[in-house]
Structures are given as C-alpha cells and as structure tokens.
Image (tube, rainbow, N blue to C red; front, top):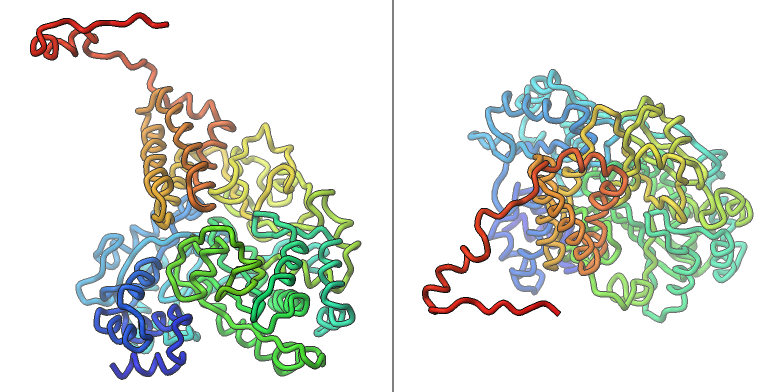
Length: 599
C-alpha cells in the first residue's frame, strides 16, 4: 500500500498518466497484482476493470509474478536468419526451462518478443530493458552467470528506467547505426539556428514553408505535413498539442533509433518549430518501450535545451512562446504505432484504434487539436526551416521530395541506416549495402511489399514503392514462403483483437500460409487465401488489419513459382458421388430428389 500510494503521489493521481503509474508499480513490485489494481483504482477514482483492461493490452505488463530477470529474445525474420533459434536453445539449456517459462527459483523468465529495433545487430534481446546485441550461443553462459551474480539491485529498474546495474552484461551495447549520411544529416545547424529561423517568420509563414517543401510524413503513410499542420492550427481548442511518434515497431526498422541516439536535437528542433506554428505549449514524444535505454540520454538533451532557452518559458527569447516536451514510455505494443492507438495509450488506456472522423487534427490528445508526426518527419521540418523549402524540394522526385532514411538489414554486407534520395532504385540500394546477390527484398516491413529480382529496377518513392524505411534483404538460400509465414504469424500476435476481420482473418491467413509451406495446399486453397486477404483488407477497422495481408498478396504476385512448387500435384477428387451422399435422405423421405435444369 505504501509503495502504491507513493507512486500515485509521484504522478499527482493523474488518470491520464496511468501508463506511467502502472509501469512504476511493475518496476517496484515485479508485477501488477490484484491488490495493487484495487489500490490504484481507489486512488484514481476509476473502476478496477479500467486498469485491468489497459494492463492486459501491453506485453511488458504482468498480472502474475515473473522472473527477476526477464530475458526477451527478438523473434523476427532477420533474427532467425542470423541465428536466434540457436541462441534461444542455448538459453533453454543453460536455464533448464523452455521458452515462455520461469525458473523454479523465480530468477529467470525466458520468452520471445517482437522486433526490438536492432535488426542491424541481430540476434538481440532485452534483459529488464538492457539491450543485448549480436548474440551467439557461446555468449549465453557468460550472460546467465553475470545475472546470477547480481544482487537485487540488478533486477527490475525503478521508474523512470534509469541505467541499471545490468548494463555491464556481456554484449550490452548498441552500435552506431548510421552508415551513409546525406544532406539531411550532414553539415548540422548550430544550436538555436533552427528555432531562430522559425521565430523570424510568422506561424503561418512557417506552415507555408513546410507546405512549399512538399514534405510528406516519413512514417509510411506520406500525408502532406504542411496540410496537417494547417488543419491543426485552424482547429479550435483550449490547447494544441505536438506529438512525436517514436513507436518504431515495424520489424526491420531502426532509423528512428539512430536519429534519437545521434541527432536528438534535430528531432526536438522540429517539434519546437511545429509548436510555434500551431500555437502549442506542450509536446509529447511517445518512445517505444524497447527503447527505454534511451531515456536518460533523451532527458539529458531536454534538460540541456531548457538551460539554453530552447525549451521552457520564452523559447528562443520570444516572450509568450512557452513550450516543453514530455517523454511517454510505451510498454510493448506494435499497435501503438498507429496514430489514434498512440493517442489512446498517451491518455493511459489500451492502445485500441479510434473511429475516424474526427481526426487528430481536430480531436486528438485529450480531445484537443493534435499534430502527430514521425521522428524523421520532425528532423526534415527542422532542416527545412534552416535551409529553406527550395533546398528540400530540389531533392528526390516530383511527388516525393527530399531524402529518405532506409533501415537495411539481412543478407547484406553493410547493414545500417542509409540516407538516400527518393527515387533510388532497389538495385542501386542493394549495391550500396552489399546485397547484389539478393533474391528477395521486403520493402517497408511485413506490412509492405515483397519484391523479386525482376522488379529491382523499381523506385523507392511514394509513387512507386512507398516505405516507412524498413528494408529486409534475403539471399538465394532463404525460403521465401517460410519468411512470409513468419510475417503472417507476426500479425496474429500483434492484432489488438478489436474487430473480427482482423482477429479471425489474420489467424486464418496464417493457417492457410502454413498449409502452403507444408506442401499440403491446392490451387483452390490459394484462391481462397487470396479472397480472404482482400476481405481482411477491406473489412478491418484499422491499418493493421488493412495491411496484414500485404506480404501474402505481394509475394503471390512476385513469387508465383514459389507457390506453384509447393502445391499438391493431384487435384481434389471426391470419395463419394452426389447420389451416394443423398442415399440416406432418399430412404428416409421415400423419394428421389428433383434436379432442376439450370437456366
């Protein structure tokens, strides 16, 4: 009771901070018990079911005790081709448990988790928020030994997740991920230059500059940023909010991790520019739970900006322009990358998508006008303020201006983040990364498109291959259909379960794809799977279900020969005739069926 009361006081018993409150409870007590749920509900003046509903949604929250050390291995197509299964088996052997189990002494829980943003350094894992990269089976014994020697101070960290003693674990390091910088990330501006350029204009002029640059959202959807800011500014509300979507959950994507690690000031510059344009005093950066290790780093950058007058009261010396940024940590939910789900999570709820309209520009965070943009989008906005719209629009293509950050991983020599101009071909990108022998490239993650060698001449741009940045490269030795099945399983795991087309449809698509991989499918099964894919896309409530069939549909188009090779050679032949099937009914009714002639 004392712990829960202390946590409630820490957050002012604010219902909208329920995510932070529950996270603090879990970090201090190890799990979210029935008793703590009751105490939290009483302290917040809400029903216990509201807390239970929220907690059940996020994979990083537990309602029952787990191990003092939570070992979560990344389970992705890239991690598996890099040896994740062998690492998992080594952990199972060392700990004497299977995946999903907890040791008898309550010290270790071992489980799979979705992509943790380390595709360029797989196999990877999280141990109580500490990131381990480039793992091999031989590392496992040393990691377990180091954890066993840790005292209780080496267990779950307090909230906020400051550095833990576990940071000294073997392989507990994240390597810099930027391989090739372009105009966006070169010749960086001096501190305050971006804010000064924006303050030299009017808010409307700032929006006009963003509009003239033709900047489109870098999260994948490609919505015009200037239009979004204009709509948000015009919407009436007591407050206008700026939200940075740093919930980079698409498997194979890690560009935002690099930006937050190496260029955080550009991100915060972009958010501050947006705040000036929209008349906002509050910004929120939604940081995915897998990036909790960046918390201290980012808070340090924010503190430094406050001290230098780039955040807080009178930003940049402009009286009346007060703006600050709060970081909200997620708790493991791919769904929260969708903007309306992110808003629900920011408000301390389960990350279920909202019905639209109204759109966030009118009714967003706390019901107020809100502009939600991706990390990379804010970096682009910052450079546009400094260098001008013409500079930015002069790069890329007519419909896709500027450059694009590509997260590249898999069967390539030089994995990492590449800044390339929009319009670059898949072939040219493969040459850069040392992937010229690729047989299969997945553009924009599982929700994107499967590209075969005959289409490597296509351009990466909104008008051709649109992408949020994820680029998975697979060599000739890989099983295309096995990888597509992994993508299908990913959507089964990540569906929020709100609507039947997605909840049931993704499961049925996974089963159908498994049948193909096993060599038990017929041509009729492929036809049914294609029809079901279109139904799921058309009838699902939000973007997850609408995109979940993409890997199946695009691979059927790009790799028809792979599907053909797995089909059963014989056609289906019924074991009985229609007359035989109806014989019992004929005996009971005492008459033969009347067969009507077709029209």
